[in-house]
Image (cartoon, rainbow, N blue to C red; front, top):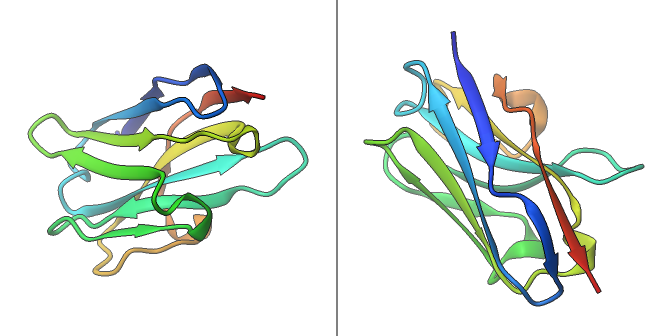
Length: 125
């Protein structure tokens, strides 16, 4: 059974930083693309960042380039999202997800197979 558990969310002032973590179990981590998505109230779930299962190729949404960084520790089966220069519009529930057996990094939620429960990030002005 594959499980993903996010942590690290919280309340931060605009301009601040947070690091989200996603602990995974099961055998999909090392051969799966891993991504972060977010969903704000009244909005659809949107792609934030992802990293390839083979190698460490990354892909980012335009609105986070230069501010967020995705990384992973394969030995610990853990995915990270370092978030800096946070803005109020970054407020959302952040989800980690795994897309199994894909050579390229997908950016649509429908192409991810496993999801965590989400962690709330709130950025105050």
